[in-house]
Length: 378
Ligand code: MG
Image (tube, rainbow, N blue to C red; front, side, top):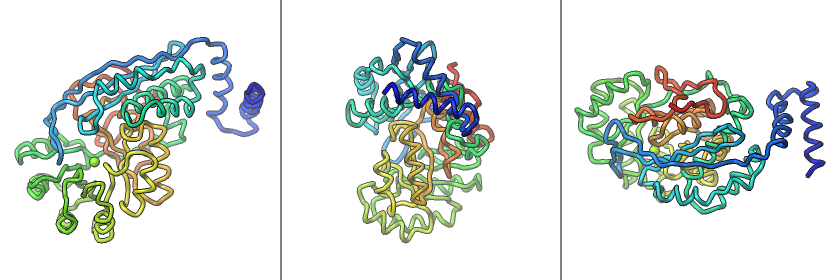
């Protein structure tokens, strides 16, 4: 182990001498040195918080005005990494489950914060599920490591911050008056995402089309059950300048989804079907693309790998979110230059944010140049 480290230091000093130029590598030797002189352990803190939504948010399967989140901090040597778990009730996590999971996490056994693979594999192994709680640790650790490296994650990954996508703004199922009001509020956004899957689908689209000709993406949240009527609806949507359809049928109905994909005039994207890395392979041939979210994937590490795998399989990638503070949104935004589409409006749907960081400027995901996930606490 010791000789490994010596070799590593030797190698990194060669890199530093310019024999091979990989800029971020030069930082690592210092970090290992700094780390060696430090006896501080990582400290994990967390506290529950409740997001207030600006509007009652209704999708095919549920309706709500608040979202429970768990805010997380990992501190090491006076540097604090911030993380967040957002837990819309239909996903099965809560303040109680997150608190119970996070109480089991013992980061004091790791004395090197840069061993991310080891640390996050341990966190994943503590209990099954708890994906949002796991994501909160993953995000905080990324933030901490990025701060120690002095670089934002998009730079560590070698991504161009100018290549961030425009994000859609989500409009939940509602009455025509409220829908028109929401479209007005979404003025800065260039793309709308509309929730469908109840009996008023055509009315929703026609109401929006009566006030704007912006591109629309639709999300059915598994709300349609019959493949034939789903196809008919998609053919109708095609005439209304719709870009794609997300999760039209229940995730279990694989044969129907394959049938629909073969006939659909619009791209079909899987969301509820695609939770973690192993689901990307299963989605191949069933969907044209996938919706990756940190709260499903257990955080940035796995989300990044999911995007890379989907790209290798020639699938489209949307980067999505829950209602979240700017903390988790900024974490996802770091990898947004890799995505074909972004749906990162989560912090704009709430009225009690806790962070400043990634902003939506004229509809475009706009990164800060701050290290880590690029946020500061309000
Ligand atoms: Mg969705």
